[in-house]
Image 1 (cartoon, helix red, strand yellow):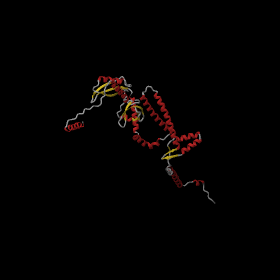
Image 2 (cartoon, helix red, strand yellow; image 1 turned 90 degrees about the horizontal axis):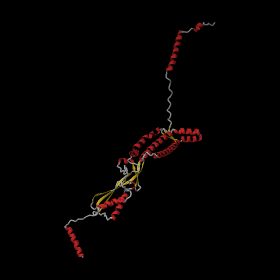
Image 3 (cartoon, helix red, strand yellow; image 1 turned 180 degrees about the horizontal axis):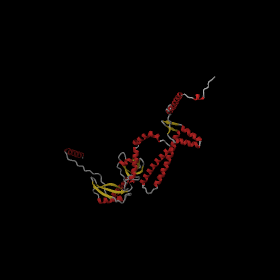
Image 4 (cartoon, one colour; image 1 turned 60 degrees about the horizontal axis):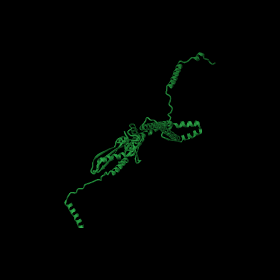
Length: 374
């Protein structure tokens, strides 16, 4: 027979087992808690990916996308140009980038040139400005227009300016050493126009490398130099900075009236009153000589060979030349002196020989030779 245990006996639990089970259960709970508190295992480190090259001109990608949306065939062509690229360091320059740069540069230059011409025409119509103020306004507007055109071109291309960081130091050195004279001449030209000491149309003295002085008229004041044309149609380009630091003779700075001097010498036997009258008449008969201020004849002194006069007269067109007006006056003086028997003397020298035995012997020998020959 098989003995059956009562149900209560099956349900009876061993306290030791329960305690062990409790202990085991507590161990499992502690283990799960420990597992939850333990840090998660880190994934194995991945190797850093290679940095992709940065497009030097960001606008090229947007340009290709826009063209592709309109025409896939043309877009594919431009995408081919974009893929043909050269990588320099972390920068990538494609054929499309170069073509975009050239196109934008041509567009910006053309637009800036047209706006510059328009601004010049507008400034020339301003009647309240004189010639120097108009020229200054033209220069300032030109500088502003081209600076704005440069910024607009950079914005249109979407150029990452960090791409030019490499060249920043070199460009700064170029400005500091190579272009300092250019910027100095630019600032000097602006200052000359501001104080109106030198302006187009003025007549100044120009000295060439040989030291010969000539009078010329300022034709143009440029960014780097001024243009001066002399009477022989020689054009001198003088840097603006030289006019700021060197002495300049401006014949028409405050007034266009210039006084010309013409020295004249006559014989001691001449009638000085008649000479003075003839000199005044010679000036009155010559064109370009002003009546006011009046000409002046001065007796300057008694020279070794002549009585020295100086004829002073005024003109108001020095750009027409000084030597030619002096020549015309001299020609008229010569004619009047000839008509009135006024002598212009030659240089005269009196030679005195001191007596000596040798000189006396030479004279005796010469006299004896003449007597024998006779």
